[in-house]
Length: 390
Figure 1 (cartoon, rainbow, N blue to C red):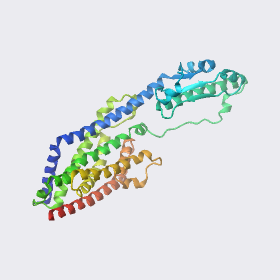
Figure 2 (tube, helix red, strand yellow):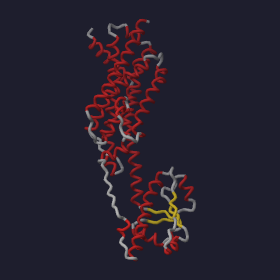
Figure 3 (cartoon, rainbow, N blue to C red):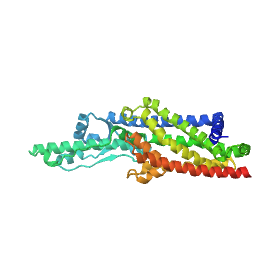
Figure 4 (cartoon, helix red, strand yellow):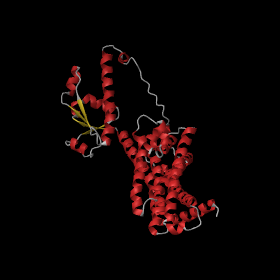
């Protein structure tokens, strides 16, 4: 029989086997389709709540009666003042109070009139994200109050305020809208990458260790099919299932954008058919490589359970490599392209930022994945030949 026709026959058999295991396949598909949109919606809900809190412009103060000038300035800036509860420190620790508390001393106004610099306390909790975000807004309000007081004092003495600001700083942000959104939506690349691994996991283990445990591997080896054709057929089916899960995972992000609660995030987050196509092209070599690697790990095991335990190492390695861009503050390094999972995640982040990809960024991960696939498939073929001899 023609080796390619043999491989196609094995591919068809393995694909049908994977589709018959509907319960496992349904769990994988549902998790891959739902996790991404749910995480995106949770993120948009958090951003929307922070934006709503910023629009309220609410100032929680302890002792505002001691600072009528500060009250006047805050109300002119359309801020709403609210008296702080007596147990505000405990409420901040328990995250039951989402606003920082401004504490004003009794002699605030007297020191201000004397020309001294009264001190105020801006109390927040670093483990309370809402209070931390509000503290920055209150600090900006206080800086504005200081500038107004300085300007009035200098005007009474006939001194121009511009003398205190000999240099003006104009901030320029080079990041486009997509790059700014990628700071929040970079998890899309990570979720799709993990979907590829989860899609390949069950199919790879079932087609190797699963068949050995069920006793169906030896009869399969008795067919007039070369070992490499058998391996290629199984590998093709595993990679196809992996890419099917990746396609569904990417598709799930298209309608989920309509449900984003944050208007700013909805305007910045751009994930359309073009980005999806680039994602899939980048993930195809990785799906082939991770499928071959999982098969190589599972073919050494005598049971499906043992294969699951051994494949955990591969899963953890992929997750660790995928998280590297999140903690890397120095930008992309040339060696990132030579590490599977890390290269795909970095390039997908570039796609989300709207940046172009060079020929080297396409070819290097493709070469590494092809080499890794070849080595792993050769190892699987040797193990199958050994099983056939036994």
